[in-house]
Length: 295
Image (cartoon, one colour):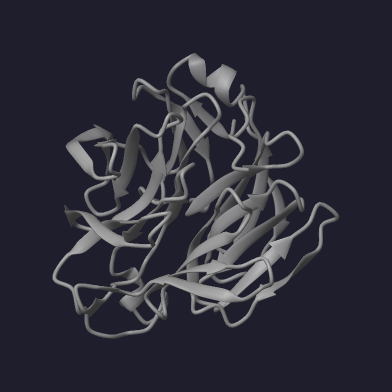
């Protein structure tokens, strides 16, 4: 068995098992996978390798961008433009349709951001991202002193481009995702090993912070990549693999990944394929409830 079933609903969401297929290996540390629904390809990062790669359904893996400023998390906006978190430059960028790169955020209150890590885009174009310090270490970014006195979560307004600090009380904020109706923002904290949820107010600010769930179990890994499927089930990496939670925060079970998982995304023609970045390897399995369409 490659799954741990904790609630019978797991069988309807994931299945009775989850066979893992290796799509590529011998990377250094993979992260940030995102599927392009129109062009039918997967982009993913290899942070220490300072490269982003592209996988296509014919099995080919090619270079998407090199150097990549040690890019970590990625997400597509409604126009199909890739927004990315760059560790080495401490920036949030957007790849335009012509291939040019626009810097969307680099500083807050006159100080350089720590190292933007993971990112999500709302339907109105607002961008939410986490800003821990992992990209200020030698392996995953550039070793340098931190300019800010906190690790925060931010919002970039979709119209004005204004950067707003939403929360500054995290130890190391990491993965984040919006609920299906975008009334809530989930953010996990790797060192605290829990998932918090906030209510999203009409102006995009956050309120009513509380701990929503804790991925618990045995094996390598902690809270990192996190996304919502098309029925509101929340997937989050954690000990032993990818933990699946029902919308009511019940732990349904774990897709077990022998080497641990850093991140994942849904893809394929029906968005029923789950692509997983697991350290040196890119994996794939199938689930029953597909991911949600971004475009």
